[in-house]
Image 1 (spheres, rainbow, N blue to C red):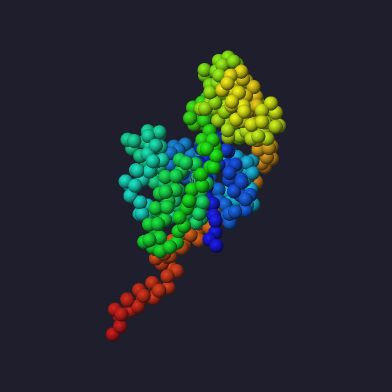
Image 2 (tube, protein in one colour):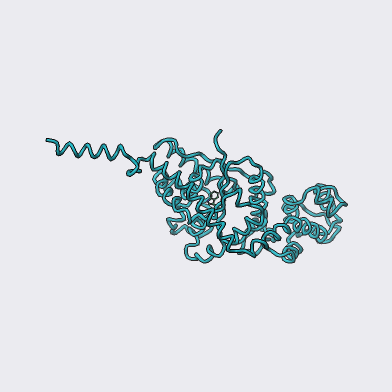
Length: 366
Ligand code: TRP
C-alpha cells in the first residue's frame, strides 16, 4: 500500500498561541500518536518567514527556538516526528527553481492567500520576488517528502491546490515522480480560528490579544478575566449573546462535558450553560473563571513539559540539527529522482556520456 506521509509547518515569526494549539498542534499530536502515518515531518519555515521579514532576520532567528519549544511542549515527539528547519535543507530551494518553470505569474497572482497577503503587507506597489514565489517554494516543502497529507488551516487551501497543479504538471511533462498532496482541515468548526481575547477576528501579536502556550498561569488568568464578552450584557439579569462572544467561542473549542463534571457540576454541558446565559441571570465573571480553569487544565501539562525542555536548550538545537539532516536525506532522494526524470542528472547518465562520445568519435573516424 502507498505510504501515508505528513508534512506541515509554521513560520517562526512569533511564539505559538492557543489558536495554533486548537487549530493544528493538538491535532498533529493526535495524528502522530494514531499510528496511521508512516512518516511525519514538521517544518519550521524560516526561509518562508524571511520572504516577508527579510529585513528582520533576527526576529526569525529568535523565534525558531520558541516554535521548537512550543512543538515539544505540546507533545510532538522527535522520535516519532521529524522536526526540521527549512533553510537547512537546501534541496528545497533547488526544487523550487525547477518548479518555477511550471507556474505562470498570472496563476500566482490569482492565488487568494497570496492576494490577501499582498494587500495586508502593502506590497501592491512592488512585490518582492521571493515573497511572490513562496507558494512554489511551499510546493517544494511538501513534495520533497512525497507528502500525501498536509494538516493545515483553511487559509492554506489555495496553497495545496497550487501544489497539486505543479505536481500534475511535473509528472505529465517529466514522468510520474511526485505525489499529489491533500489538505487535512481541522474537524471542529470552533477550532478553525480562535478570535483574539479582545473579540477581534484573529489573534495577532501586534494586537496583543493572544494567549500564548508559554504564558504563565497568572498571565493566562489575567488575560481571561479581562476578555471581551457581549458588550450589551451589562447586568447579571440581562440576557446575553453567546454567538460571536469570544468567551463562548473559547469554551466551544476547549470545554468538554468532563470539564463541567470537574469544574462546574451545576451544568452538564456547554449547551446548558449557553442557555442560561442567553436567558439572563448569569454573570461574565463566573464564566470567565470556568474558562480559566478549563484552559489551565489544558495548558499546565504543556507548561510543565516546556520547562523541562527550556532547562536544556542545547539538546533542543541538537534535535533540530538531527531532524534537519534526516529531512535533507529525504529531500535529496526526491530531488535526485526529479533530476533523473528531467534528464539533467548528467554524471549518472552513462547512456548520455556514451552517446556523446560516440557522436564525436564519428568525426575522427577515417
Ligand atoms: N504557509 C504556512 C503558514 O503560513 C507555513 C508552511 C510553509 C507550510 N511550508 C508549508 C504549511 C508546507 C504546510 C505545508 O503557516
